[in-house]
Picture (cartoon, rainbow, N blue to C red):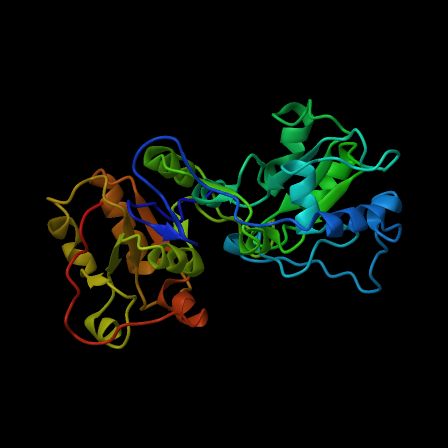
Length: 344
């Protein structure tokens, strides 16, 4: 999955972690106090999946959930037939005392947390010391990539913001891992409990990774052109404080009747003149509204003009204004065109 959906800026504060401008990583220290007695009770509980060959019964109704690209790590329920690892026990096995009773199914087995989210989200914030492979890349990573030599006895604990895509555990099982779990509550509960997280502070690396990611549609077979950005992805970027230049190339009446927050209006015929003196590395999102999302229309023409002028960080809003409205995302109204935001 690849996407140029969002771009990190200095001073972004995400879940209480500040991403700094230098190299290296910011790490939040442990503030949780693990109840070791409760962990010991979990380990001894013979009704738990680790005493059932790491299996749980299949549900009577099996849903096959697909979701937009931005939510692939935020499913509310764990994948079917995948046991859940209690968050305190996951910490105990990966970072805590790591001891288990003699003869326990976990004895002598390493445990590792794996982030299944987009690489960009992993760079923003992840569990300290955990691994990362996006679910779509797992088959190649396990076959002849960075995970091919991973000890098959490893207790694999997968996480997203909540629970990952349903295919992620399947890939590990197919590669010979028998103990595959999902982290209880995902990263959200991990942070709530005060366990350690880290953030990459390399702005250049974050940009590079974002620009190499590509979105998928609501189902894996959907294909989205590299320069497209979905409404939800754009809204996420704006919420992070990221300020691309959003350009509306439709008519004045449509712009007045509701436009994306911060968008300026540039008639399609004036695009070349308006952007002659603009920095060619400016991040620009282009959209229109007259064709109601049926085709690229004027925005597609504008993107072509800007490409010919040498702009490389261009994005076309998937679904146009109609797609934005269908997601119930906010609009601004009025005739005054918003000035271009500061350059990043």
